[in-house]
Length: 186
Image (tube, helix red, strand yellow):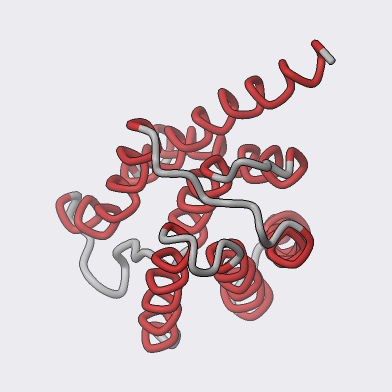
């Protein structure tokens, strides 16, 4: 509840930066925005509000690493272009947009509902956008995919909206396999 105002600001920044990247006006902008969003998730959700050891010793460092790697990518591969979304990427982006609606349909209401600027939706978006760049940082994609695969918990803990996260994690696995195959042929 304490972060809803900043979540709205971050969502607007993400949308503007993505538009700049997709239109090639600032190819680095989506990576930069995802860097900031992942750092914010790490600091706000896990450093400040996290109370469990897994949040402090797994999620916090992982999100900080996501953020740093995205910021690194925005600086060192800033000219890399974000490609037009494939059908799979378009579907995953649509599912990310629908995250709050799915949460509402599952009976959650604000502030218990999942919003766009929360850990699982941000990783879902990060995997999808990361896969859309011509140059893929395999370490970043692998780490994001690791978190994406934790969406399997949606089945066990009845957080069914995180099935979106699992789908993005599985998509990340496919992207990693495709990224590694050409490297083996070389």
